[in-house]
Length: 110
Image (cartoon, rainbow, N blue to C red; front, side, top):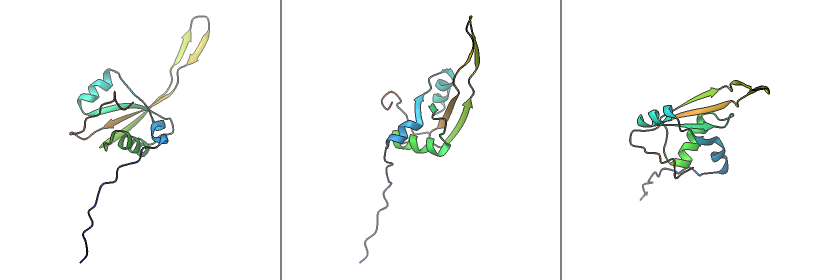
């Protein structure tokens, strides 16, 4: 008799590189509005791709995102009194949409 193989879902392994992809969650008015629509905003590494963000969210929070949008926000040029000009840093943001039944507790997994 041949035994049936039960297919089990593999849990992703959390590695140190995963924590380098997601820098920090973004807490702003827009991010709070997004959380009502079951989405989360993260600041991510400048070299991170959508696939990297999906892998990192899945490994850290055990939730598979439904959609990921990435935005690069260029640093603004600012003037300082008597000191000339400088630029703020350029930031890459990822807006992650989650399934309807998923809840992300950002305070515990940072």
